[in-house]
Image (cartoon, rainbow, N blue to C red; front, side):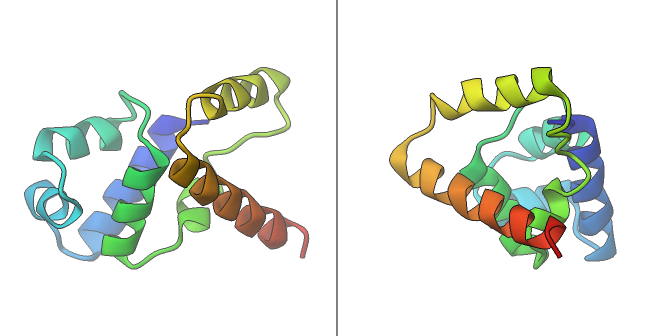
Length: 108
């Protein structure tokens, strides 16, 4: 997962909506400093947070992830699979939905 690219897309969409980091954070129920961290790609974010951000920005999670996932690289795929082991049930359900959406998008 390319978190820098993901963060860049989030920032791009936030600016298009003319939202400050503070306003986006408030609407997502997270801290403004965490929005900055996400936009810089400094830390991983949970699927729940990704879905909240996408919802507030009125965009799909597959749009945000489309350039960020590089499943052709085996090491990155192993990292994603490793991260999956730590997911809670509701986060796993969200991940499955995101993967299915991305799969449908790229199989067209």
